[in-house]
Length: 252
Image (cartoon, rainbow, N blue to C red; front, side, top):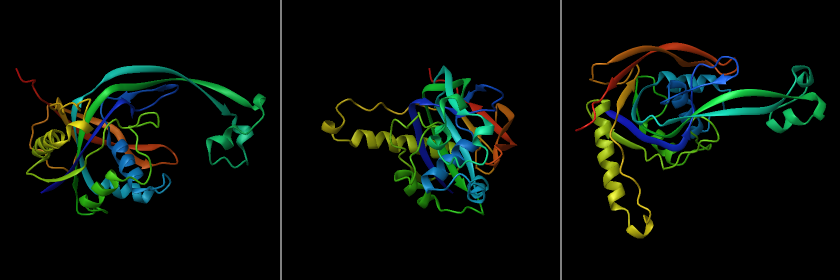
């Protein structure tokens, strides 16, 4: 069976978790909604195209191999926003439109936002019967995305190419192993003048996270319910799904 595997790493990432009030937490690895949004951006899908995003959600199984969960960074965040009365019956398709008001009609909101520093992971995708795109098509748009890709928030760009590869393997964990070997070979093949600073070798996996719809032959150490199944973008509605995790012992 075929899997599409790619890497996600950067100085900062923000994988949104359930947010209540002014606190915006971050998971330590991308969830289903983050991965669907990433593929949607690469394909050039508009956020309001809920049917296209639902096809990405249901057409593939997803697994994440965590190489490093990174370190927590907590940011005290302020932003200017107009009151609801000021926005009523005014077009505001952009941030500039929202702020095109007299100063006395703008308010300041406070929030706390979490980020993950120096996080790294691999992602494996396996098509299901209703997959809207082939793995080759997805690999191509990840190499040349239609929209800018970022790791959860716009302030978090990837620090390395995603290097998407279609890999034939018996399960996702084997696909991750083959991918790491291909990535090491690619790094070793780089001409030294173009690699003066030396790109680091990929890290081993600390744990594997997966949902339904993808072949993983590991026995999960942890099974949880995660509310990150995107339903409606307009109302920020998310449904529950079952998530499995297997932990790897570090090599001596």
